Length: 525
Image 1: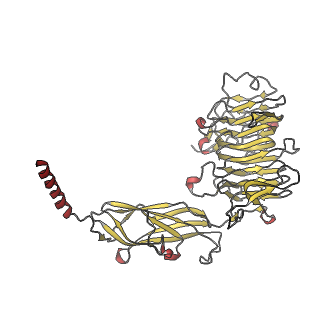
Image 2: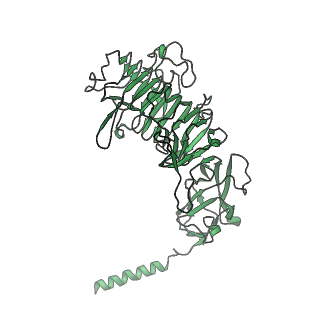
Image 3: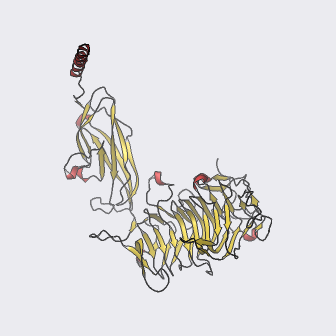
């Protein structure tokens, strides 16, 4: 009986309390909303490519539950922005979905989120835009009349040249690359999405950025030229394949502005938001296929790829399969440069922050590196290999070992360093394994390996006038700032007989010769 009386008493109190509440009585907004931002800046997007989603937080600081009669985009149905408010896309009218919202409720001392994104076609005749880039703006309007409040929305849109494979509208099958893979004169079909570039597409200028979906192939007998100042952006799983008897020439030039690198050719992903500025693995690779020839890269920045450059085959090319100078490769999720039985000549090359090795010369080949900075400051707990890897073999799925001669691996006036130890590894299964490190700053401190085969640092046939395990004094290697400071042990250790006339910034190398791609220059702390 007592329990029943207690229950009835509690029920009565709850009933009385709830009857006095006004939780479900919403008052109209009086124009006193507060906002986390006064302007929403959507980061730069390419024409026709959707933006990331941005958000605006809206606050009701009052003690009253309110209803906002309307929230809408000022440009109405023609607006190129889309909104979502706390999961709702607004009215059901197709033309107004994401543009117009009615009677949005907001509890006392509570907040709501508005999510906004856009896709803009710069060539739309409705815009009347003639330039290659422009600012697109709109406003989010809250309520109307004397209670109206607003937030500006701004997006920079860039026009671009888009290169992409065709897609069958019925089957949904995307075009794949076809070319002579094995040099037998027969065109082979691949599983790689992409297409060969047309003759009209074989010169990339600096007039507009280029955006590539899938792999852009350079056909046999063709040359892809990238002029100074060109900007090339790759979608996920995209890249360039230079096929048999084809050539890639990247012809950048020295820039006066080292922040904007106005004359360099820059190759990176197609996400322009600052969040993606240094994210590795956003695109595939530049693949120099077996049989491609006379490839040259000068003053280029290659960043955020899976493999910056993959060079395969042609280890005995007279002039090297690839010559790369005055260039930098950063933030690759696998390898900065991966060579497989190939030939590469490099001068003033900087490679840093790679998920595996910054440079790997595998399955033999021929390599000559002078005044290069090969470093790796990727988290050493997550990478399997050192900054530099050399070997002369591959192992197939049946554990069969195949050996190929390493006829040359010369590293002159270089810095080979990183945040692990050792930072170079030499592995051979065959008898022809020729290498030499001269006048380099090297990181190698391993009591087990030191003195063993390939690591006899007292043998001048393989190691000459090197400095081990001393501080290179990089400016900030974790941010890919690889200039050396005044405390660097790379200063003055170079040999003038190997010297390249100017460093990667165009400074003259005279007098004392420093190892690496940069002369010692002062920089701000």
